[in-house]
Image (cartoon, rainbow, N blue to C red; front, side, top):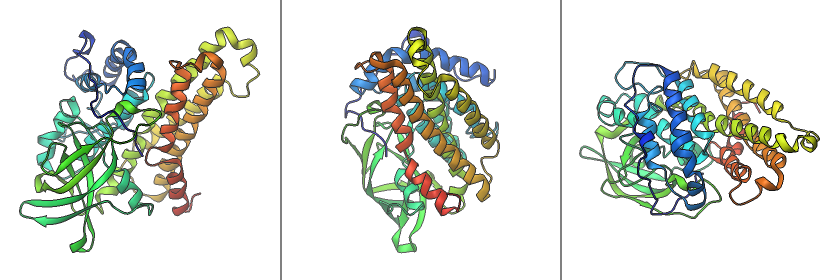
Length: 388
């Protein structure tokens, strides 16, 4: 599940701080510093409009790409490494200010991850570099397929072979980080060919592709989330990521899940800060609450250690490794809700006002627990893997 945004999502005129140079070779630390500056100076002032008005921070998303936030985990030309840790650190830096924007960063990272891990050299040479710099933006489109692969839903898209590609029909109910000039990943079956599954990248402006507004949600409305309708949409062979997907999905699934930790880490870190800030004036009474900032600080340190260890071998296919990935993702969702809940308790009434940070973080935290793969799906996956 992903949230909805207004049909006409607002954008902002880029401020001077957004005019970052293209990613350079000065290393991850310098990139994280650039991302932090953008998050503080350009994203932070938009947070309330993003949360309350559904503003989509497109200029920030493009600036983050120009600063190198999307460029470290998805090498497109054979140069560079699949550095998931740096991508997660950049995402978490954004998430300290705004989970809507951090989620859009995850969508962007996931789409780049798909392309970089495909055998499609055309996409790697054309769309791929644009995704890394933020020139092209897009979403993941795998909420329904991820549920399908684990026996929760039926696949919603069906295709048939036509000259030069495929014709695809169906509807995806929730796809985020979209716009008329954006792209998204998708998986469709070929009923006439034994329900073989194919994964491809789709252009939102393509013939037969239509994005449609959905219901509003309590948080993350600023993510341009739409239903996508495909009616005999033509998907050229040049846009195919994998056909069939059997060997491809095991290659991308750990990275797909691990990258989501960036949302959780940033939100938890900010919730700890909120608890610390509240303690400056309310410490004499907050000390009676059973969960303290130090408890979450220790948890966060442990989560980061485990996730970054898993990031070093994202293509490992053993069951034991994947169980660790699923457990880490489950813990991140649970900890996000717990940290935001306690930030609310520590802040008290000052966090309960409409523009209060604590109540916003609490609403956002539930998203970490319900975005695909959601808490209940993760628990089902562990049960299926014999690790519940």
